[in-house]
Image (cartoon, rainbow, N blue to C red):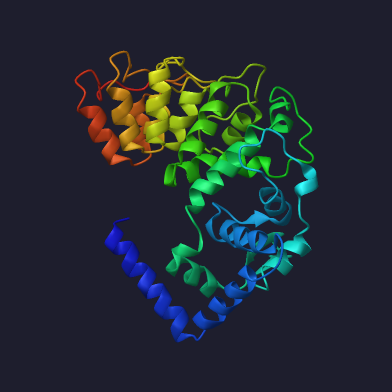
Length: 317
């Protein structure tokens, strides 16, 4: 979204809340949150950040675990987990638990608009959220879980969200610390339980039962999320086969094409060794993935490569 468009949207949202007479009330409440004693201001503002910027509605336990993560720590200390009642109190009524959906939400849709119109309330929220998720995934408790069996994930309620959304937040905003944490995670991503949980949430990609030693490496993951800096760094490290197939035979290029990440496709195609036509186990090429999912930009980029053969039918077609 262009910067001028963002500013216009923030101005419009601010006018809506002001017109409804809620802007001053929200401002006064946030002042009260920040004036609390001890750790309450941090809990209150971080809870608002998570609820207003999360990729999907968070469950109460997920939010509690998110606020317990100490950035960069390899140990997730369960003693740090606040109760949901404590969090609600710290937020001074601005968030509530939707008992029907079992999720935490803002008290009113106009609060989302108000927070969007005042981005200065949170410093680099997506970067902080990416760091939080990656710290959790790199923790000793999570790394001890096996993806090859039905692992007991009780006590790791934040695991599913972190697995599916760390890359979403990192793509939006990537700090140096998040970059380092991501490289640490992806170095041993093959077989990591977060890889399994990510893939279980992907639709229409020939999902099949996971087997021991299933393949989905770091370069596959970075290409899946479309994080430019991370893909470039992993290529430079040269520890990943750029044409390596995962458990379905998808290459990193196929994942980038499947999700419509134009810039990642360009980065991968700059590598001399990349095979732009390599099909997966079902005969689908990167070009067919892009075409079937309506990613015209990727189709155009791939067709610009002389070796890409659009007339060649997929093996599985």
